[in-house]
Image (cartoon, rainbow, N blue to C red; front, side):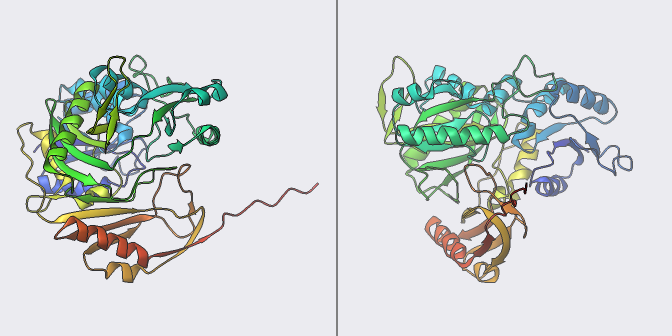
Length: 445
């Protein structure tokens, strides 16, 4: 029976989904995480402890393990383990993305530079630092702009500024976010990929990008030898115009024209090729902009067309993958495992029903005390599931400082419009009782 190595960070929501997918595929599973499991001695072939921040060391350890228990495929469950997954696949001579390509997908600066060289449509950008003369920089950039940290995810630290005053406020806010990171948000370099560090990029660096108008879409796909197979294209019907970029509703199939959807897929494939990604799942974010700009000296402005916001060498995050079903009910995780085992595997088409998910946003900072209206939300026609992933008593931090959601709503229906309406109706039924965050009493004396 084939064996699959699942690389599972402790922070992931997706362990159960991948374990269930492996059961349905019918494979042996070894789960690797960065923290030792108390049951490892009872199941030595099923559990491994790896140092994810040291890819080369982890790869050597897996090679030793595979000498006794051969591994047929490696699946990196989330973004934090894509690099170590690439190192392990390389050591085992399995199909994989190169380490430089994975690093590029994790570092917004490197990604922008590679897309730039390949002429892939994207926002104009420049690299900046908190140590720069920020007042002078504010005079030089075009507005509106978006500032982005190089490696934070879930839109943390991503802030729009429409003028110099807002730029100064946004940078100050980003600086505070970066100071709270431990370790600082950065990405290991190719040269240092065998070291126990991810701090080779300056922690105070950030990007300043032109804000691109137009609707945003999310593409879910699989790469095989550099060719992209689109599994689903999601519309994001809520405008993502800032000042923060909290994602809420995803609905598929897209309501864009067939021509525009084809252009989106082509643009995403070009972006993957520019970055060097060749194998496995891809999650890409694009804007369909009325005016796409390049940061290339020989190009000016190009009217219309998709514009790449980012490309990730992983599948869709959080619990959102549960919205996708293929063929007769195959999950996204099952597709990923089957593709990792067999390069000739051809994924079935997505189910015929429209589907959508709402990532329930945090309305304000505070402590969650109660969730009301769950039964009413579940009773909305078209709603399949309501999941609250935060717990009562948990402190809530909204964007741009926070990166979590209160939970998820899932819906299916005959048409995208009906799915979107169901998600909005269910959300209206929910009431979150949030107390203001406690303020420490001043010290006497």
